[in-house]
Length: 482
Image (tube, rainbow, N blue to C red; front, side, top):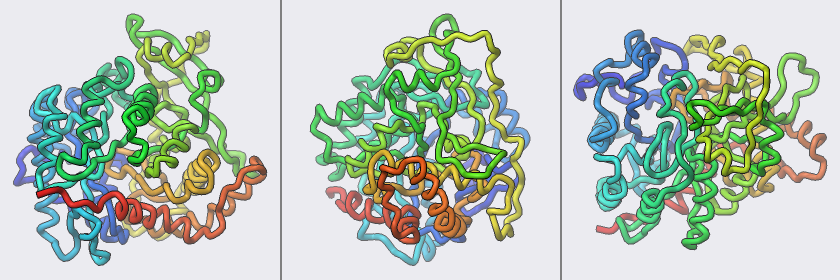
């Protein structure tokens, strides 16, 4: 998004820091090097049309390094070409410093002395050159010996033909293309899954990432895997948080404060009550809570993913982790009713939808102690709460299926305890220190649960690195056929 002319774009080593933390560089290759990153996933996504037409995005383009011509490009058709441009852009950045970084297509190519990048596709729209040929293009991409992708995210933040999505955009929510429409997986979406999983195409299985799918789409995906006998293929949840609650309708209704039909009866606007997490004692200023948006995983899903042998990437967005106020969520009306949910009217005014970026601050690169930042301990506590909640839902084996799915450079409001990959060593150290403290409170609240935290340094290291390494050793080892 930094220049419409390929030759004028800054390379992936460049750090952009002239705006606010949400759009400043959080995962540039320079930051990856400083943060001692050895394995990372580079997710490729093309800009969706509603972003380009948003007034707020256009305003941001005029105030920052964003290029207005880039933002105005006609997306929605020809996205595959933009996708290939981004691949070439990363390749050029890697070629500039081959002694420091490489893109790998097989675990056997891993070099512990370099940054090893694995490729993924975020949003099937990104590989479409018209609305319905993503499946055809995926076949071609899988057979291209130059590339290999670890996983495919079925949908992103706007409507697409694979399935309906979960609402996730707040600042520019007035554009209805960000509002979900329809229900569940489509036949086209199922065809895409079949192609991704078909090992005879390109010689490998491309895994499916459930991030951004609606709860209905995810439920249908889990069932489709059973119907097609795909249970032995692991599920990816690439950058997620947890709702803290069950997906049972009665449990969801307990946490709905208000739900009313809007937009000529097409959508339902929901105002949530946040579920409580593991509380920190002697704190008068904040509670530990979850974000109950359906974008996040429900309790049942955590176990489904762990039992599949999959991988859950913990997002480092403080909003998704529940550390800030929650804005309204939007559902397709008929989909909302199909979930077994009811409308809930109230005379109270709607809470003001906001991003709560009033605390957004520019931080010096030389910051030596992230935990001294305002709210950093609160944000880290929320991350610990998420980790222990996963274990509570799926048992001690969940420790082997958690990793970092930061979503850095995904326009996130990063937790103050770790605002870029450069600070991963601080995050590891501070998690080791805080997790036992949070565990004590978790054991008081849930004395019958085996949280399985017995070697905190090793288990944190596993989340930071080893679990991801073991996963790709097992599932990223088959070379594509010649």
